[in-house]
Length: 611
Image (tube, rainbow, N blue to C red; front, side, top):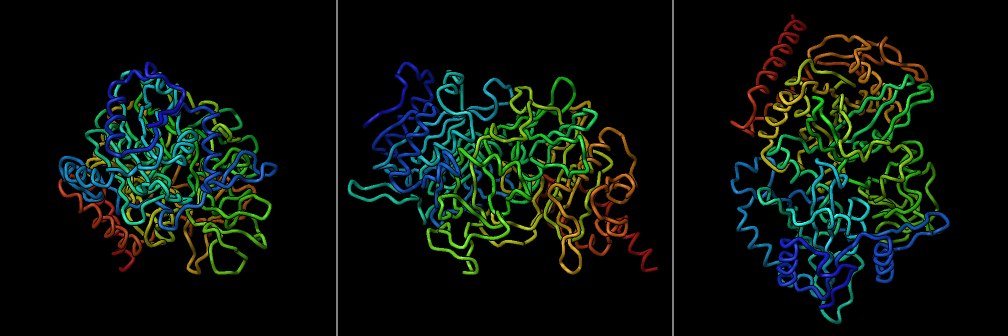
């Protein structure tokens, strides 16, 4: 077997790693083995090899320098939640919101699939670190994969290569095994997107800190540092060691007076996290500046100063392309103007990329994400709704100067929100930590194209973590509640809803950059700059305390955005009760207390209206 890479045998000091690689080589039978060093030369070589095989299309260097386009198989375009498993030793520890199988049975099933699955392919050894190399919050992993697409994306999304291996030494690490599940016979022509259309598994063994992924080459199914390590495995590590791994952006809000406030916010996938993380304040907000620490994942740990500190464990953005434009997110559009990998977007005749809503007027002719000719009005999407871009954080114009601080940044506010057309007000602030955690756990949202299944269905998505929590969510809620005792200065919690609609179906709030108005009120509340009105949900803004300069929004419109209607909340509370009842004795008693109080208050309001 050919072995390549810039390492020598003496460079690899980790005995567990060497033994594991030997074990997987014997099981998967690759034709070659490559130890990845994370260098630019290696990245460029792999990209060129994928251009040669047809997996990558090199974009026009005069328009989009050093950038590539990949088009996946139509069966492999999103997370496959029904094929994602948490194989804890006890089914009870997995919980009712995850798929479970007894670990030894799952391993037996997968070993049968892995046997010989890399024949004709190269096995790449990808050492990676989630977070800055020297941070006490960071974690090391190694992904073994037969996909060069995974390697080049992992170089962008993680700290990867020789520096990681040197820092790892002989310490333990998270084992991540991945295969596209498509072995090649000696004379067989390879697919431009190899995957297994019939068998896909994304499996986590939380007690062992191990991930096995088979059959998919797409996104978080294959880039195992992303959702698999950063959330599903890390959430169990956080539970065991007193910290949190969350599906959250991190931003810094700096006032004209120089007051800097760091905020973390959780929204379900494709609900505007990246746009909010890179928000550009309206012109009327002179002197305000928003900086970006991270757009998707936050690891939060109590620090010696009594506050919750957060790092972005990733070093890249794997963002949703459709809907992204200079109007909605100019910062990310400038970020992806070079050195970017695009997946499942459309190709222009000039050799550039395009997706829905990127420009007001679509091009007259394109090659769509399935490689077919496309014209406006043909009835098909030019780009897949879950099309993505992969790009380095370092290219972002709004990147925060502290984004790689090993100690993280201090978090003053936590924001939770979903895509809700009714019921949920624009913004509210629960009065206490327990009520805030209940609010976060009650997050619900209309489903999007980021996961397989129906789009537009409202589902409960606690803390935007439903697909990503690596253990029983009832215990996860308890862990959240316990964090207050570890913090002298716990962050305030807020709920938001950018997506409320009128009876006619029109959005009541413009969103995007105008969300700065809500963020400013949140920052003002954190620093006790403004008071608030009390309501059944906690505190809500007074019209006079919001910044309305530069937008037409009268008090009656604001009241529609903030309306809390007992008849809608009757349904809301029933839905929450039904969801929380799944957790049985694992559900914290604090949630029952908060929900009973809400129910009693709404019953009282409804009876007073009837009377």
